Length: 328
Image (cartoon, rainbow, N blue to C red; front, top):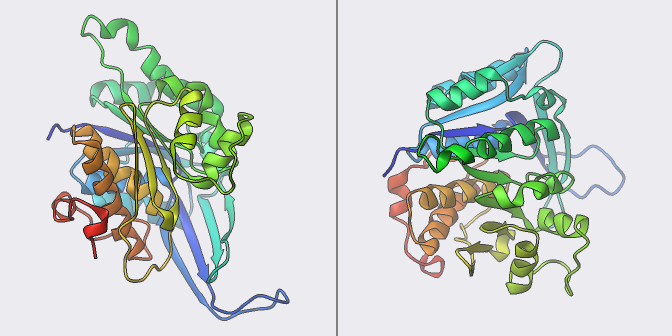
């Protein structure tokens, strides 16, 4: 396998995950479980891809606090390059809080102010050039100015690419959340692989003024055509327990998930799918095999309360069967 160099840009956060089986009828106190785990899209993509054998670095900002120190030490322990993980003098580390219970939508609150300090400066440009970074994984938490600068790394390279002097980076763009999913629309033509979930997909279509004759969204050709009309070429839309839609090379693929015997929670599963799919894509695997890699990564994440599975590695993916319906 070619050793691509990954730079994952965006959120490195602490996730506070609360779960209760007791209905909240009177906004009362409830017994339940609370877990504090490292999270963030940029962190998750970097760690997943690093575990799959792709050298990865992260570009983000954390606070000068115990959470920031905790996250940085964890990334270093995993072998992720933290050269571009900076520390803010004034803002706190990103926090993401989710409250969930059986059969009900999760409630999420987040504070990502520190991510406004992520910038593409001369140090970042030197790093990309000197380390031969050829894959950018971007989440939508970065500012619009920073997003433009990241895509500028690709457009600036194109004139020299014809002479072999520069290779434009492969760009994976994550929609990240419904309220910010639209930020990548101006760059659709520059995105090599786009990923979102069904709620982010609905937000994008609504923002673009596109309506489909069904709600909630269904994985099918109508959705695929709608995204293609916006300029996206290759893209992933995840639908939780309903599976995943992938459009690649002019074809649309729909697969059911590998269903684990017990789902603890779904946080991190979408990023895990994207990581597995991207891993296969960069290695030139057939689309269906890329999907199966993604489904395997997602299943491993669904079986843990961590946002990245401790068991994940490339050999594990190869042991999964060729079809989702064959998996136990």
